[in-house]
Length: 236
Image (cartoon, rainbow, N blue to C red; front, side, top):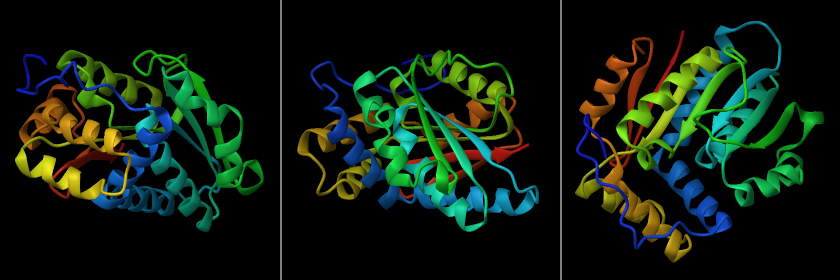
């Protein structure tokens, strides 16, 4: 899928599942792999370091991070911090529940300091100015992209965030596929199969660190989440 990594594109005979099935499988994977826990603990630490009691502006690129953002917002509320979440994705169907307000109501809505705004747009070209958000989050989007577009994603995340960024995605290898299969048990079979096969397009740790170096993201740190996930995150 590019000149930097040896990743393999998802086979053409594997079609993405419907939005609801995909969301259920992704949430299981995020939770059970430990990726959600790592990201929530990072945001807790960052909130405690920032004594200013204000609403954090969080941009989520792609639907794979919506459940993580909700959990971050719920935990931040315990620290008396509000989180305004903006989600950008091309998939209008996946964004429909957010636009209807269902997700915002489920998360507590504006009254509890957790707001969700959904925008149908290209996550690599979101309609925002530089430094529009405190943090940017992208989960399970990079493995779908060629290497050059992964670099573009990281550049967009850096440009739009004032304080820091979080990128989480799939690892590659036999153990990654096995762990993904185990952690998505109970999910829709088609969505589960889709995610397991997607590990072929995942990354190796060395590839992630090479991208970190090339994009000059020296403030970020690498966290392994089980055998199938990683988090690259940091605060400036």
